Amino acid sequence: MTARRRPIIPALCVTLTIVLAGCAGAATSTPTGDAAPTGAAPSAGATAQDATTSDAPGASADGGTSADAGNTDPTCDLVTKDQVATAVGFPIARAIGGGGTCFFQNTDQSKYLSVQLFATVQAAGLYTQLEPNAEHVSGLGDDAFWLGTGGFLFVRKGDRAILFLDPDWVFTPDTDTTHRDALVTLAQSATAKL
Image (cartoon, rainbow, N blue to C red; front, side, top):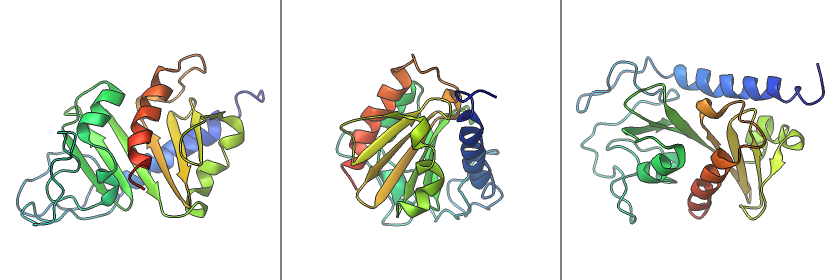
């Protein structure tokens, strides 16, 4: 195995960890109100609140909506559905989150972007270990890097960090900067809210 290929294995493990963590919450029942469709985006173990909750997030200042009604995970409020749709190139039908992770999902539930918020840099240790094999992104937060083989952008601001992952972008070639640039624009909006 060449030195250039070694980052692929940790990146795949990271991606698989996120997907499996999300799937652990997929069996969580949805309360009465707007029932989630079969195969809905995983909620990372959190149970959504009733859609009539008065403190549910709503429309954002830029006209897009953030989290769906009844979704109280603050990670879903870091960016709007419209901002995510612009970054990933497909419409976002719903945003559902729990446990510090928000899934912005298309009606084709295999198409999504996950946004994960870490309260401490230590909690993001699995990702920070991959930084030496990644491409540094200057001018974003206090530290940021893109790992095309993992399909994610990691941003640290102060003691907090955010991870943006699109599973369709795993194994993005280093020469393809389109996906990286789209996530950098999205991350600029998110880090402004930290």
